[in-house]
Amino acid sequence: EIVMTQSPATLSVSPGERATLSCRASQSVSSNLAWYQQKPGQAPRLLIYGASTRATGIPARFSGSGSGTEFTLTISSLQSEDFAVYYCQQYNNWPPATFGQGTRLEIK
Amino acid sequence: EVQLVESGGVVVQPGGSLRLSCAASGFTFDDYAMHWVRQAPGKGLEWVSLISWDGGSTYYADSVKGRFTISRDNSKNSLYLQMNSLRAEDTALYYCAKAQGGNYFDYWGQGTLVTVSS
Image (cartoon, rainbow over all chains, first blue to last red; front, top):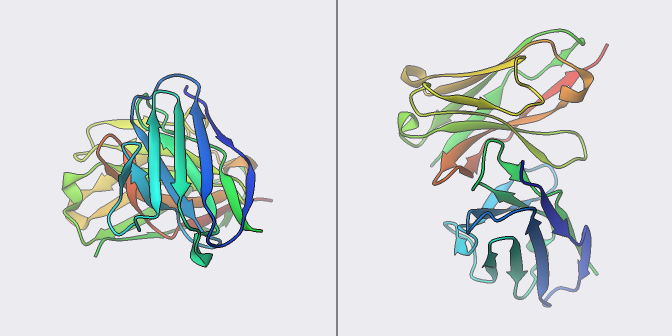
């Protein structure tokens, strides 16, 4: 089973600043990596798939990069609605599909 | 508009059984594989099970293998999860999710809460 590790566990950033979230896979997942956003009391929402492709309706301030074992989600200028928990998920080697433990993005 | 609506979550005793349902609309249901993903209170996401578009292939997380059964009825645009021999650690919000591409999840329901407690 591929283990996904996200860092940091919590990230404090001021509105308008850039946020950089990391995800590492225990072995290569090629570009088969997705990112999700989850707000309190809501279901996860797909942000990025294929490591760098934005899902439908996702603002351009969200960008994904990386391949193999190292991936990054960047939010270029944080808006109030972006403070949430973010999960990465690999879908290269499965079952099982595996998620990272999440990064909580909070207001500084 | 894609909609996934789960139901069936309740409080059940350890060792008990439960059947979850997910009603799908807004897309051609029998074109897509479907998943169940769960989230224990205050915890992260855990993939539970997958069923292929025609129900011919199913996959399970090791934690539920032999106890849970996924199924679908394409004539009713519905997905199911039969849960047997429930344990306290199965307590979670259970989401149904539509598969896309290589099995990431492009749409999620709002979840149904299963609580296993005596």
